[in-house]
Amino acid sequence: MTTFTEYVRDPATGQILFGATGAPLIVPNPAANTYGAMTNAIQDAIAQFERETYWFNDMRTFGDVAGSLSDLQTVEGKEFYSAQDLPVLINMPHIRKIMVLAFQNRYPLEERTMGWIDDTSISPVWNGLPTDWAWQAGAIRIYPIPNDAYPLILDGTIRFAPLVNPTDTNPWMCEAEWLIRSEAKRLLFTNITRDADQAALMEREIYGNPQSGRQGALSQLRRESSRRAGGAGSLRGSRGYL
Image (cartoon, rainbow, N blue to C red; front, side, top):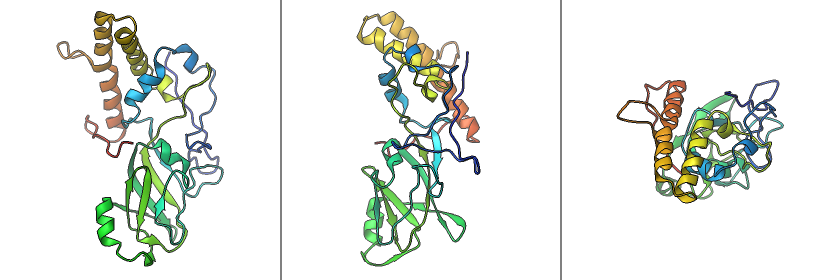
């Protein structure tokens, strides 16, 4: 049975709320597939795919939402922002877009390289409204150096909180169940039972069968993600993996 993940949202705005570790808060669902029901090599299977962007792990964090630890605001004179400033950064292998909230409007910042900002940000004391950003080693660098407190809005790929208890659940247990179950079995057949035939069957479950034209779990997730994003059927690769 297919189950779906429901996130805790601000009742006034509908925006997703985040917890102390920077992970999205999930509404408990007794009917959802849980960690206890999918114990074989689950963590390794998730780690194999969690850096890629799918429709269920592509999220926006808001810098002006009360009750959520996704609240990131610039500080006057502060140029670099790490996970100490925004816990969710440790769980974002890819940031696609950053916007600044200023004068009751949202303005997109231009993504730059660290070298570009090095060459452009000559004065360490000159500051202003942010217009550009770069990131390196898990920290965001803002240019110009902010002259005030501006909320930042981030779009990117989210890692979910690690599964620990038998009743734990997240989208890898629900929206991506077929992919994770198949990869977990492939890892067991490859590394534990040394059953090459069964491992090959699981690979076809994941990647499909080119001879028959049958799509696998991974290609189906990618196609669905592309359709939901308004694409034509192919998903662009993410950048900036940690």
